[in-house]
Length: 293
Length: 293
Image (cartoon, rainbow over the protein chains, first blue to last red):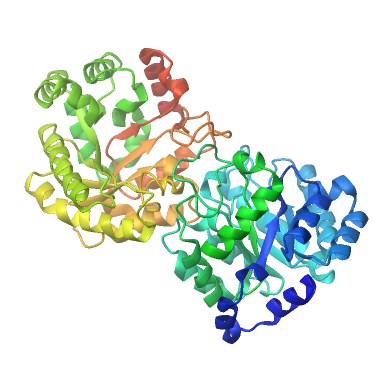
């Protein structure tokens, strides 16, 4: 069975068939978010997925730009690998109105990438700026989303809002909780604007499980990694699943129960992981994914 | 007018007299949380307050222990300085039931300190442990609060629950939002169990201002510092008011409007501040407090 066939089977499952999935190897839902193998090029990441039987990959736009969009499309198509998401659009927030217009244009290019690569969604890291108050930033983000949704819809690209951990509220994202992301998505159909759930950003939320239920129709992606007991660095705070404190299986089962049955990306920003050979990272990632997630 | 007289006037103000306060020097509400001058002993911090006309101080229990409780009481009484809070009780979470019992005992001692020093409240940093799931940790905290409230009430000590930033959810506090702290405080009268609002921990909350309104009857303390655009280190992430991104005056006015008119502590954990001579820190703190908070 090709990767594409596996994925198409996963994607057409209904909640009633989920119990069967649980007895299947979860690996069919595994996606390598390529920042986990940051030192690899796009082709190396796609090749790694083929070698290790990982059916999906999430691609970063800087890596796409390194080889060009057409080459990227060809690598992905030749490998028969599914693209779970493109990272990333967003970054709307700036004190400068010209800069804000340019960011919207850049989002159109990100949507083009996502369309060409037939990605499940374009992940939005919406931005933040120290010279813009958090409330003004949130308004700029709402305006930015409104400006790009029609363009995305025409091209069949789904916009995935990713709430980022509150520790990123000053420099990366003014969307910081699932509840807030749902409020921003509310004016749009769930097929156009959804939510990306990443355990690093949401695990601490006192209302996590009820918010997952509320998010059900809008869940477009699920990212796993782990939160270490000692955090070395805010940006690269993550560790391999099982090396931290997050109840990964419980959260995965809650997201399954909400009806999401698409790919599950492993996205680990970590110097330690980046300094490990990519093949070793993928071996461990598969082992931990199938035993812990 | 002695410090004590100033404070007693501040504390008896009603919301209707707040406009007058705004034209008064805010400095009457200033409190030095002594971790801001971490290199100073308790006596040096109290002396600093006297020299710079700062009417209140928040004391840490490790500094109290360095000189003993009786000496600490004497220093504070002789200086006529008001104690806005004792830092800290809490740290309830452990996987070991014996350890949990010891933590409760330790909280009784913290309550004794707060009673002897006539502090406005005992601040609770409730704890977290990597070997305890976050939900179990939250239950342990609720049980811990229940175990200490009667002892505190008998001694006239108010328990102040401080929600800590979600980035501390694995190692310092499983209470991470104002909403969650209010739910835990709910079974108790507001005079017994209240909330400590620290801008570092709450500034990102999408529901901040409505939560301040909801918290109104329970606000027992207000801590200021600032969140820098670049965060060097999770624990010592803070900077001097005005060097970061937080809308301090807007938050202070919202908390005033909610009816809180007690001391405002400056609490800055920062290597840069700690490496600056305490007198220079106090000068700058007063200048920034009166112009920005």
